[in-house]
Length: 169
Image (cartoon, rainbow, N blue to C red; front, side):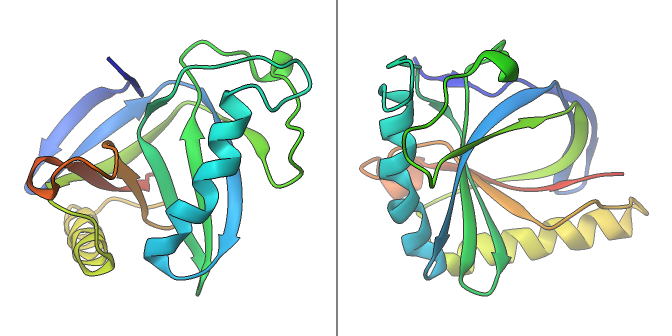
């Protein structure tokens, strides 16, 4: 079973929940392209890193979700969450200059779960609904909406689990 990023649900609201995430480490790649192809473009360098394309030749387990954030226009950051408990100070350095490791401190985020196949319209609609709900609840955000995909591309769309998220102040 694929390890999933841990969190604690702090509260539940209409259409979303507030979560507390413990500190974790991301490996990330920035890509330029349309929303739907960004994940495919970033996937190979990220998989190679966890498969041993690093200065120690260390292999790491694949986890879920894969995170994608549109930085600006056609610029996207795609991230893998490394397995829980990994120390960012002792991670092997990537051999691919496009890959970077990023430690993330404990934080709260609002999350909206949704199912179905992957398409830009579905992700954006759920992101907008999340933002409207968060603002309607009087919560302050920190950053932009990002998206989490939990399933492999070959899984039937009606079985896929996805989320829209945004950090909270």
